[in-house]
Figure (cartoon, rainbow, N blue to C red):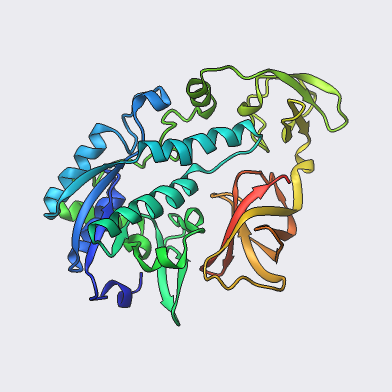
Length: 366
């Protein structure tokens, strides 16, 4: 966030989303030190019965809310907990499960940002008279000629712009990402200087409601059902073995297949209609083209002609040069210069021009 935006005097009130971790703690401190009237809050998103596991170590645990409250007391700002369990269940958990059931691999953090942090919490901020919301994401926002741009973080190892690609102009105008100019080590140093209880806290889970990392077990508990077994087949349709249910597999997966083979085989396709998992050699996983749905362009100036850009097809993917062509019905086509491995439906393809995040959408098999 540029200093010109941070020093806006029109309404210096900011609502801080606090997970109980070091990042949001330092974000709150930075904004408070800038002279903003701040209030910290934790979004309560789910209870134990939703995921069937102890919440210890997740952003909704008692320990994390205690830590967030302690940091707010240290800074000298008020703190509240707001309950969004129903919204989270409807807009994040249910689509997450449906996505796996439909042979996709979702990114729930993107939906949480879109529907919870920058919708429900943003509306709460407006209701309470706060002009801005603040999060501990590593990304930057800049205003240029009346438009707001989302940029990568200065620290490439912590950049989280990928999960923020569908922010709107209004949301960007009322959001601060104070950590975008810092490295993780610098953030921890600030937390130590401030003597925050979160200064040496470990990183949070990638998927907060799957604390043990076993998403398939979480889905079975949530649905209270077992998923029908089916056939592993090769690209010619030959049966190779029996799979344990479509939800257990993702494109590009090799481990955990549990079938004998004379070579390494990988998941190439999930055939939900016929309940088959199609396996292939690694070389067969590479493709140059993909289609995205729910296409979003941050500035609103959607390109009418094909344009050059770079694109990432998953969070840890290194962006690659490509050409974007906007289609009808909220879709777009991305053609890479070189084939990319394991393009996966349900993941987001995010578009960049250097440090600028242009937009993106959800990869589809349609």
